[in-house]
Amino acid sequence: MKAMILAAGRGERMRPLTDTTPKPLLMAGNEPLIGWHLRRLKAAGITEIVINHAWLGAKIEAALGNGAAYGVNIAYSPEGANGLETAGGITTALDLLGDAPFLVINGDVLTDINFQAACKQATQLGDNLAHIWLVANPEHNPQGDFGLLPNGRVQSDTQHAQSGTFSGVGVYQPALFANTPKHTAAKLALLLRQAMNENRVSGEFHDGLWLDVGTPERLAQANELAKMGKLG
Image 1 (tube, rainbow, N blue to C red):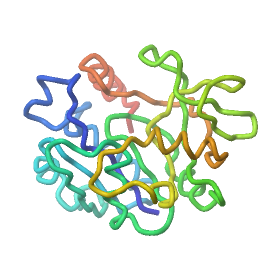
Image 2 (image 1 turned 90 degrees about the horizontal axis):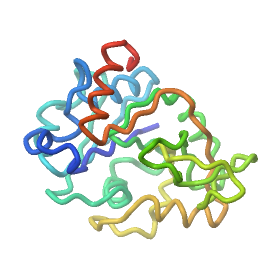
Image 3 (image 1 turned 90 degrees about the vertical axis):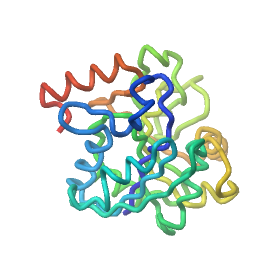
């Protein structure tokens, strides 16, 4: 299975740090944020990686190269300075991702979600278009994003279901993006909600490590976790 790391965000809330450094290259301990993903993917046996980039993307390519330092093979999907949002970025990279289900990870989260289990989920999608991981609602998103039903189906609202926040990790069928034009900005949440309304999204809760590194305060948390050896 191939994996894609979404790394095209501008990181506005991280300024001025991201004025000169792309957000995925901000350090958590002795490793850039994106490096933790690459190490976990390699450990799970996933070595074919696609990375999209926009703001200061050349610096990402210069830092990571072809991925050899991490034991993986990296292909890049550049988007220009403004980026294409999540679904737009994935759609534009489909030629690199191939025809089989693939894993996508937000570049600005840190998590110990089991990527080997994700590989298994990719073989069990059936008619589903996606399988996503949810986490307990953090302080910055108290209402959550989606609802998980007891049968493992995910619905687009949280009524009569367990409310959860989308972790930024999911396995997707290429068909989820079939009606999204390449090189056009589009949001993944909208596509997921449409698929949920067709009862074609499954999911599960992850109760382990998960941190959305979206602010300098949370970057400080990431550094503390790294010092305690909890990131890998």
